[in-house]
Image (cartoon, rainbow over all chains, first blue to last red; front, side, top):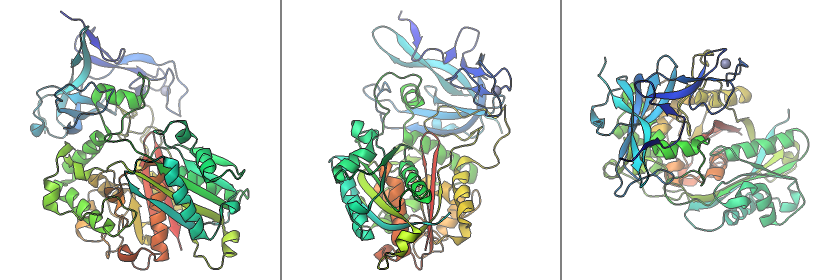
Length: 145
Length: 395
Ligand SMILES: [Zn+2]
């Protein structure tokens, strides 16, 4: 069987239980950054750093979504034939931030509702001769009021 | 600080002409100089908006355009601020004049656009958010526009018919504009048949990418006063603000927003702040506007802008649109030029094209698309990577 490897290293972890995005947390003010991008805190009222690696909440509320019907340009690994995919914006309560992700395969986009619970999963994005390349996605959870 | 005035404007028509961007720049620059009654020898400073898709000449657009016009020894500046590049260039030229370092400055933006979706620059660059969003998510610009549009539908009950009504309006506005690329008048039925690109948005809801160029001649008020046969208008405000941390609004090209944990949320969202800063400088408010050019990257975004510039409150844009207030003949026509719907974006030229339209309206030169007795106009846009741009022009 081919190995599963992330498309880009270091953005999520599957090591400890359910998959989680990996961000940076400022030890002084608690601000969270995703991707971590830099080693220091970007809050202008804080000179904290270096950031601690931190897993982000694995559940959030659906802020918005869309369905992409046309193949994007490279570096997106669009297959042939092109398969449309959804993209969701999900609000994480604890972090007070919105994180984008593709919608998990098989999501019924017509049934999505604003504010419903979404759960982080890791799925293949594409496959080549050497490996299955994975990325995080958002999967619809239970519909809440 | 003394007023800076606009003495001349010029454009190269928008289209997909396939020539080098400097060719369009020269046409627009010469037209603006002729409009101002000046020649290249009068220009003491040249500011240009950069284009990232035309190699090194595009990264140093100021000198490329100076060379194309014929070296005259003047200092140049080259600005990149994505869609806001033209306004940032205009701000550089204005500051030069305000500082007394020049009386006449030429501001130019020109682009030759690639086909289809904009993609990131080539190369493997996992630290570049613009690369990441394409690589991991396939999040094109229309993806973000689709997210904003869906959000508007869910929050305010906007419908695809509302978005179509924006397209119908703008297509009517632009039909007589000789610089517009698309001059076809659309009906709602035709829009409903357009293929979906990023649900809920269809191909005709989303702006295309175009070639084009726009140029503006700025002068000091003292210089303008000596050109008695010209019709200068006043630059009442230029806002080129960036977001305030934490920017918790989803913004291109980022795959996540700032976190609100470590600092209080800002009182004013970024797009509202872009307009607010300009209104403050001009000492004017939304009620003073005769017309506005807003950045309709999508039909739904035009509705967001109505609220961002204070024409109405949150969730009221659809009603304002349907009241006819933003249509030519209404209280405050929006995108009398036809907007991006009729132009398609030529990135470094677009903010200047907006200014050219406002100047044309204020002078009463807009022909069939003329806004009646226009005295105050606002042009606003937002570029990727946190660039705001707003210019208010008065006569
Ligand atoms: Zn901090």
